[in-house]
Image (cartoon, rainbow, N blue to C red; front, side, top):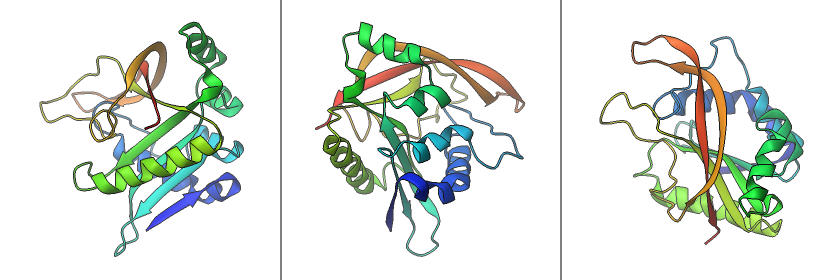
Length: 203
């Protein structure tokens, strides 16, 4: 079952979004380790505050558990720049020859299984495309870690970019961000990561 959320309807989802990200992003390449007592991620409130944002989840028909969650909003959203990135990001895109007010940013696109859920992933991608194009956003971008640390040969990114959904190019835009990160030895440390933005036109 696919469900769509916008605006204040997302408020009820915030704890679920936080749990899903903690579960889906705990491995390569993010090794994300949210605080155990944290109930929501404050940055997820940007999806509530920007009326143009869209959150889509898919629940298993039998269990009702979320097995795919995706969220996005305009790259030039004041809430994205205040709560997650910074105004410097817009300057970098502009200097690189892009138009930030033309770009839709996918905060995350997290399926449980990219292979088995390929048709569902493509369907949800189409839903975001239709929504973004209706608001006149002609391009799509996402971020990924530059030179991520692999723990073993089985490590692979949880998101479908470049695998199920190809066609992205490196925008040359880079930022740094830190979050509590699992280490090889099992401990958790706050680590700064370099992130790269990848871009494509909707197709």
